[in-house]
Image (cartoon, rainbow, N blue to C red; front, side):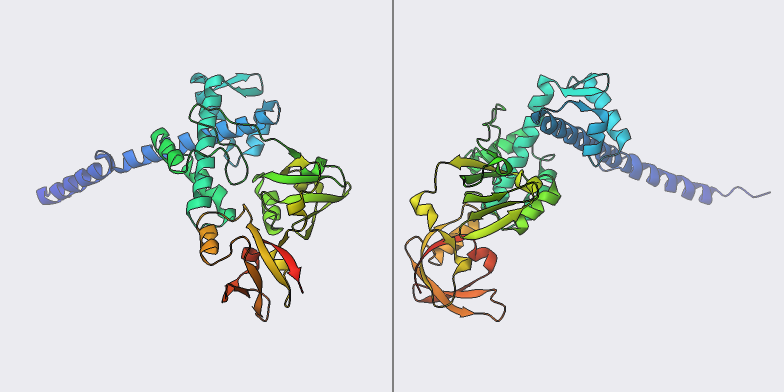
Length: 342
C-alpha cells in the first residue's frame, strides 16, 4: 500500500491551483479568452449574414435558407444557430423557408456596410495597399470599428459619399444614394458611357476586371456586342469582356464623346519618338500615389516623351521637365495624354 506523502500532496494541490487560476483568472484566463473568442466569432457570423441578406434583398431576391448557406463560406449549423438568435432579437423575420431583414436588421446591416466602404476609402486614399487587397482588409475591419470610431474615420476622410469602387457610402443615419447608371452589358453598340462603378464581388470576376486595368471615370465607346463578348474602347485601348464580367461594370450613358475626351489616351501607349501633353491623371490613381506623380511633375499641360526603354519595356523612363523619371506600365496607364507630334 502506497504511503501518504504530505509533500507530494501539497505539490499536486499547488499544481491544480495554478492550473485553475490560469484557466479562470479574470479577463486573461483560458476560459474567458475562449468565451470572448466565441462571442467575437458569433458576432462576425451574425454581421456577415446581415450584410449578405441586405445584398441579396437589394437584387430583389426572395431568400431562403439554401440561398443563404450557399452564398456564405460559413458552416450551415452556425448560420442556423445565428438565424435563431437574430430572430429572437428581431433582426430577421423567418417565415417558413424564407428569411428577410426587419427594419432594425436593415439598419444594422447598413452600419456594417458603412464601415466596410469607409475603410476601403481609407485604404485607397491614405495607404499604399493595392486595390486587390482593399476588400479583404475591409472585411476584417467592418467587425472591429465601433460606431464612434467609424464617425471619426468618416470625418477624417471628409464624409465621402462613394467608396473607391463607386459604391455609395451610407451616412450616419443609414441614408445612401443610388448608383445612377446601367450595366455595361446593357449599353447599345456605338453608344458612349462613363464608368461610375465596378462591383468587387464575386472576387473571381473582380480580379478579371483588375487584370484588364479598367478604370473608374474612364469614358468608353461600345464597339461590338454579342452573347459571347462585349468589345469597347476607352482611353485609346481596346477591351474585350465576357457579358457576365461586363455586367459588373456600371456606366452612366453619354450622348456623345466629349471633345476633350475623344483624344485622351494612356501614357503607356506612347512610343519612342512621339511627344505628348499630359491632360490628366485617372481617378483610379489616388492618395499618396497621386500626390507623388504630381510632385514629380506629371501635371496638366506638361510636355512628355520617352527617354529610355528598358529591355522588357517595363519600366519606361519618361522625360518630364528636363528630368528622366521611370514608371511601371500600370502607373503610366493612369496618366492621360494627348499625342501632339511624332
